[in-house]
Image (cartoon, rainbow, N blue to C red; front, top):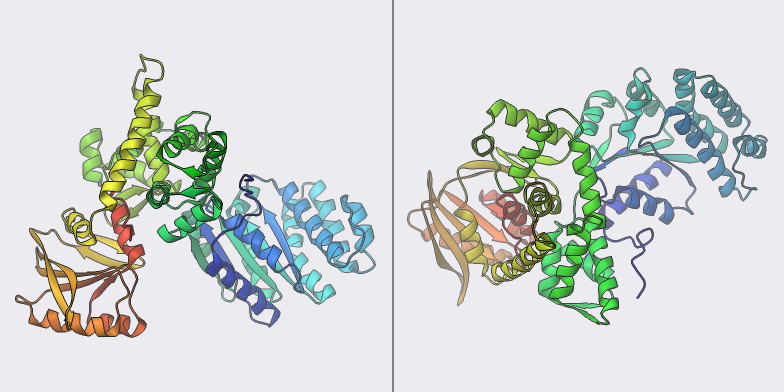
Length: 545
């Protein structure tokens, strides 16, 4: 089997890709909706944009892709002008050139105004007149579309780095051009969601042409399983191990790809056509524990970026405590012996760096595997003196084996037990799940029961006494039909005392009519994704169907 080809082995994101295609086709039909694609680093934004360009290459539209990360203005100007004219020559089947002067010579007869502007930009840039050059660059798409009669899709990857050009009002000027260039669709992407949201809301909040924001997240559990199957095509792996890897990686596509690559290598080395637990533990050791493992090096670079600034030791102390499962300011302050103001300051810095996220009063490391590495690799490396050669490595392998076994034990529990265990952790906090806020009370009495939904059929449920009344949680792995909901509502009416809050937990979701009725009855609905977000908030393994 060949190793995974990361450049061409695109997987998933079909829904987002369809939205982007729709926006491009809308531009050709006279409707323009600019798009902002935001997500953590290495989550797949660039791969998605490249796939868009490849799949729509034959359409009568020009794609101009610019990556601005750590680029200076001179490179930006050269990249913009060269790429625009080069893509035109390629579309028109004209001789391709690399040098800007040769490219201009080839295109001048067909695009005289565009080439004139490109030449002026090159002259201004070489003279260090960046402000004037920037204004001209932003005029290029409009002149180009006028001369060619074709639309342009301008993709600015890591667009927030425009701020580093030290050009006054750099985004305000971009916003002016966006409003007037009706034949140019802007797609911007960024790995700094918080900073970019501020730019979009404060500096690129336009009268016309506002941005549709799409957040790119890690894969959910089913998508992560699918990516593992996709990468390990032809190599057998048990369902338990596949489930463990999907949970262990937090659904991050980069980590899944890298772990699968190592799994393929080790299965080949050992001549096995099926992956067993020892190969999984060895794979994790190789790429995560080994200081030169690819994921370990990736995490080291993240740590190095965090410890370069002021208050580095306090920042790492807070990050370490978060990895140990301390999520509230009060808990962090108590264990670290820092003032609450110090904790809050460090948490703010980590949020700004896109390392942690806040939900209610809880703070979490966004990247689940990064948190695991901090807890079991980095902190031990910093604190433990390894008096015996290889002892730390042995302990890490034992920890992975224990994690595998524990995951199996938890996965074998029924849904009712998992939910009851989760509810014991609720402590009267509010959380946002999929855009909706939920107040999760503290429960004093949690007990299972059965509800009869129709003749001879029962569903599992949990009755719990909260601070403000009784809760009823109805549990079902399969799809809930309208008839199921009717039976559930009838049973709820019979209960004494009447529940103050009823929740339907359905791993497969509800039929549309049933969902509408449930919402009308003011029932809360938690699907698989929402439930697993709760599991993550309380450091529990995900629910496995």
